[in-house]
Length: 134
Image 1 (cartoon, rainbow, N blue to C red):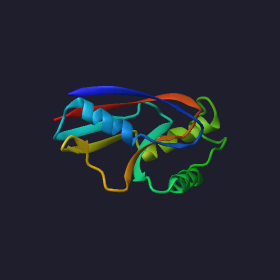
Image 2 (cartoon, rainbow, N blue to C red; image 1 turned 135 degrees about the vertical axis):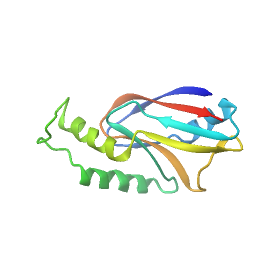
Image 3 (tube, helix red, strand yellow; image 1 turned 180 degrees about the vertical axis):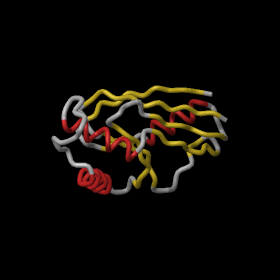
Image 4 (cartoon, helix red, strand yellow; image 1 turned 90 degrees about the horizontal axis):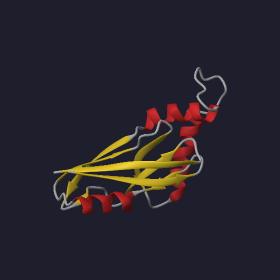
């Protein structure tokens, strides 16, 4: 089993493709058949799998998430800011972990699928973990 920690500097409300980093972590693990878990230990960020072909698609995703969960001042909790409170809800809806199947030493993804770190607050210094096991 292998665990790797990865750092990421984010700006507000953006998606960051981390597919290459996850692929490299899987390759470095030496696991050829098994599972890979990608995990974000933050309450205002999340992970998703989406198409990498058109970056505007990810902008659409974030725009719709913001429409569903707008930043507003009437959240019952206001830990830091209204944006932070909205980020908590968005993180719960999107999720903070992905489980990927490893085949032939690589994560199994569709030909146009990428792995994305979603920042719902920011800017922040973030991290995510990749754990592989066979």
